[in-house]
Length: 79
Image (tube, rainbow, N blue to C red; front, side, top):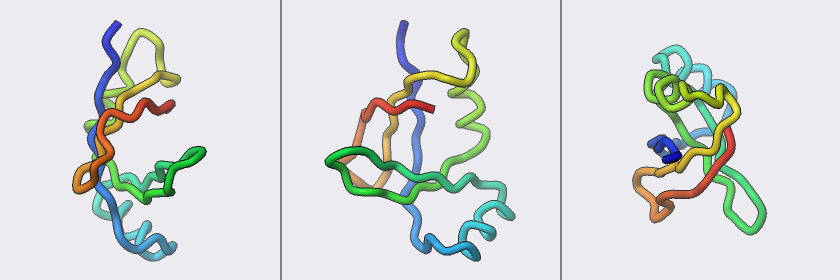
């Protein structure tokens, strides 16, 4: 089975006010983190996230995450 791909963008401003503004625009703030990796604040389009999560497996799926404006492409993540 092929893993779905989710595209995210890096975001600036990780404070509460900035994330509220993102949510008001209809975007979803997220964070990429893990062992031996740098923590990266992200923003995700809710339509693309919904499309990515609609699989036979339900909400707990492995996906490939492509982060725009970085060299991080195809990281396998759990949603």
